[in-house]
Length: 138
Length: 138
Length: 138
Image (cartoon, rainbow over all chains, first blue to last red; front, top):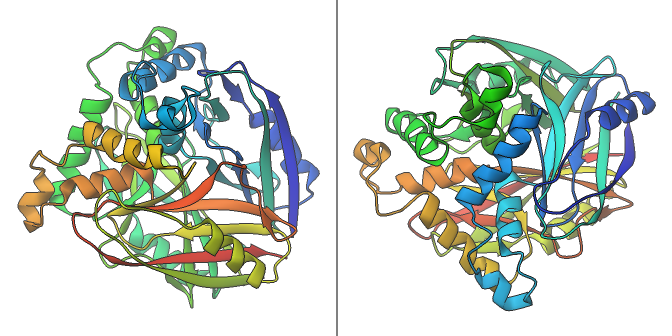
């Protein structure tokens, strides 16, 4: 049994992190599927999906870390191809990855108490995003 | 067809890496599902799931690499929120990710010969962990 | 409903990145499964699966970034175990991960317009690779 859902987001550009947990939980319940997995996927190559403890400190630490590992101030070869200056966004997105698969049992996600499903915007401008959820189970 | 299992672990804190391959293989067999996928998921935001060749050299290289990329000696904004000093643990967990999905065929995981499924502890203290397996297939 | 497929690749060694999108799309269509997920998995611990915009600039940026984060010029503990000099390959593979799960709807992958599914070779020599696809849906 398969149910597909979408979550629409307006983002503020690089460093904007959205907590999707409530939306994903509600859509899993709405699917009426009892047990299975939900795959959370972002179509696009300048954003990522992961889990974190969604609290103000980490929302600052994550952009700081990514700026250290993959600086936005360097010119990348990608920027020579398109001139849109978001080479760093693509590299950060590859590192974090576009997909996350979370089990659920009895309609409830098996997340930890301090673990939230997040969308991470890495692009260098605000974007309209559509996250895809594929709920599979019985 | 869906079967859910748990693997319980006691960890030694940051840098402790456990080989889950035998447990996952046995539980997939026990599910009596012939072909499908197993999603291995860690509830919690200070640990990760991945695959590596589980050999003594890499078990040292991985903590060394993560200490270089995300030092435990820096104070993170997260540490100001909670004072538990494990900001680095959260960042390492986000980088590695909490989920892994492995196909199996004829009851056998499609792993490489030198590839093991591992749980990586990043927290700064010993933890009791429960890894969730969701086996889906026919 | 489950269908398993394989994609065979000959790679040039570290830094070789292959676009799998057309192969994955065709095999999903061939499965005759309407909606579900495809899990793309690489058996082996020195390669990865991810999504990127497959364009010449990023194909240079990705190896440059990985060389900066995980240099091939350092001796790793892994290299002392086996003497094959590919400790860096294992570490890069762990960072990127061996699996990717992509939803599809009406036989069509939900990828972004500029987003391709890629295989990344990290090993220090040419390899023959077999990527596994597990298509699950109804």
